[in-house]
Amino acid sequence: MTPEEARRLAKRLRARREKAGLSAHEVARRASVNVATVTRIELGQIANPRAENLLSIAAVLDIPASDIFALANWVQKDDLPSFSPYMRAKYGFLPESAFREMQDVFDEMAVKYGTHGPAPGDDE
Image 1: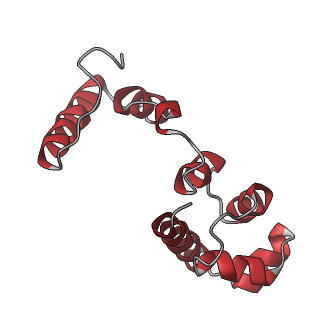
Image 2: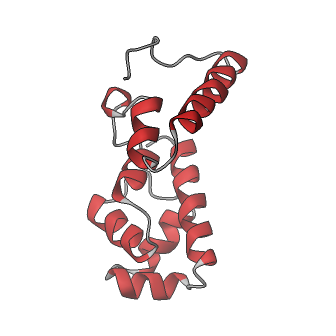
Image 3: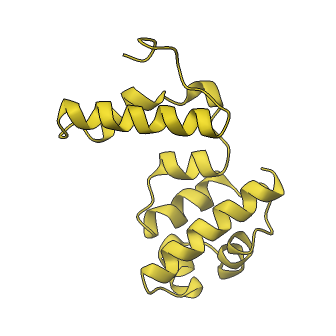
């Protein structure tokens, strides 16, 4: 993990813990990890935290393992789903018009920020 990725992970974990109204000590107790580990991860001081520690902490904070793996940069870019299939899988209850609207917004943002998604039809 890069220092920036460690900071992003730390920020997410700390925010989630605070939102849940839990102390670092309580998260550590529930996750069966040392409180120093929770604190150091939340400070971005552990560049390569152990997967089992992160997964235990994430479970206490109700963060999906896939989110933790992505935040820790343990998922290769090519292993991630493209935008449309992801949104359809995650939000399948939405009407088709919502998916078209999300895709349009995503396409605008991709142009604005100089990136691109899959070619039309590649992710269907």
